[in-house]
Length: 374
Image 1 (cartoon, rainbow, N blue to C red):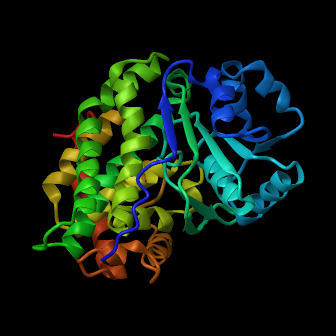
Image 2: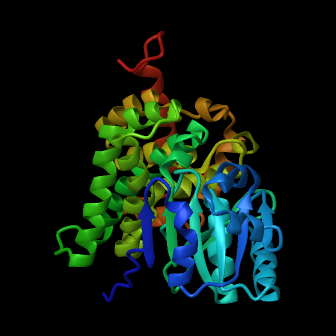
């Protein structure tokens, strides 16, 4: 197999005060005109970190984004980039804004400068955008032929963001290890692993090790709006190392069962306010149930409980006895295009429902009244 490695952005910087150097980066990239795409809260959280000239420029080339990443929004931003003859588009915000920014940059053939304000996904690193319909239902994702141009991370912005986003980022990134592991077991069991795949696996293991070791301390620091070594390591694991898993591994380092469960869960109105990484975290448990790895499920349930990630359908505000809804969720999760079918286990509506039932059983039988795992 000939891999297509997209390991990293053209330039990546994490440092306190890094955004004050944006004009220097623009000169190095021969960028004269930028168009800013930002979430409203993200813009208010970051504008004081930018040089005054950038803030003033925002009055003429600027769009606030809300909602989800759709093809229509990408088309609108792409048209604006062409109208103002932008050399680059500057995306400021979470995964939705960054996905729109990347897709519009590719469509308009301009450079992309990405400033993540939360550490909820590896969106800033990965040349890929996830698309939804106007109702928030997952439709597809698109990989791009070029790496993102520049990624700038100011850790104090992320430290002062709502804690739920860091929690979701831990859940989404932890899935990198478990999904990559399932893919290797399916396609490379008892086979030599090429070097590019070894890099992907090594990155996936870093994700697991760092998050399990430093996740609690990082969340404590962020809860207090502080930057410490553990928080920086978790931010970089979520954004950089998480992105490297798929960047080097390609389809063998991207998604398997956990993300398919996420996609299925988007059918439920009950989860509309629950973040991507929280749904993926629950999907990891279901994937492990399909793999019959009960000990690993219980280990993760302990960490999930400490972090506040969902460990049951009830935590997702879904009634586990609503058979019609669960059928709808599972049927979407196992559509023929879904990555759950890349696993080596038999995937049917029955096996996935059984896996979800196992999670409910392990949850109910391993908790005492005080709400802690035995």
